[in-house]
Length: 337
Ligand code: TRP
Image (spheres, rainbow, N blue to C red):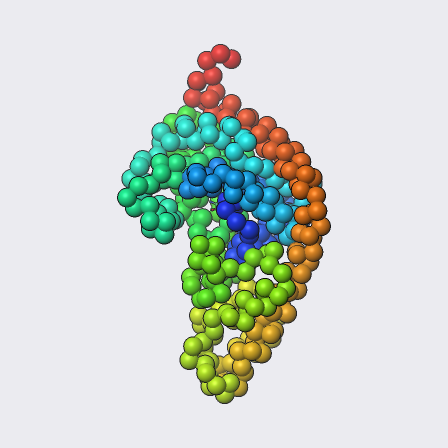
């Protein structure tokens, strides 16, 4: 069996970083026909670990994320799209997994560490937030997933999941499937920088291009995009490393020959930012226009989207119940069977 599980926190609309880091790959895998099952989770419970005070916003973003999914081409006929919090089995699995993970191991998780610093949580970390990698181990193992397509920032979560799997299997016998991470082939897609040149495109940093941005907004964002501060006159030789416009071309433009030529010209001098940006905008719009149009269509009928999510959640719940029953059986805590 080849099973995929992956997902996103509903903390906002999805952006180009999500797209090249994971969404584009998911759609490709979905349409390859190589997989027996594909589960796509909207991780609202994980979002609540650091947004406990604003469940209404999380709720609104569940719809946003679902619309983005449908817009990029995830197809509920081929992929089970579901809502994490409505699968109670995940919380039960988490409770048992927590017993095989130490607090110090959680504190060493590099992604959690970075988030704690970014959110100024140092003095008071919500316990649920510190433990979310364990809940993520439940997300993955509840579906017997062996492939998890995600961006690079999720690698520590996969590592920790594999540790949980090994420990559980060691204690209770072969119970859980050990998953592998699947990163994008193209290096630049693993962590797309923001339009300001900062290491990561992130809502908190305010440097995103969203899948749902209209054409004018995308054009304005490309215009203000960080390039090479030393490239002042068109005739000056420019740098392409760290130049976001070229990074995005590497991530989005399939015509690599043209991109290589443009880089060469830019480095030599004589190619202006305005020209390169104009080309990038065309390339981005080729991807974004159909996504935007499909999103508009699905937006007209939110009830249908919720219905799709409800159906997917039922399917997901049935699978998670099977895995939980297997664990409880192997732990010999299925007392009333
Ligand atoms: N941590 C992921 C994010 O921040 C979301 C997520 C939750 C996830 N559970 C998962 C991703 C399981 C992959 C597998 O976007």
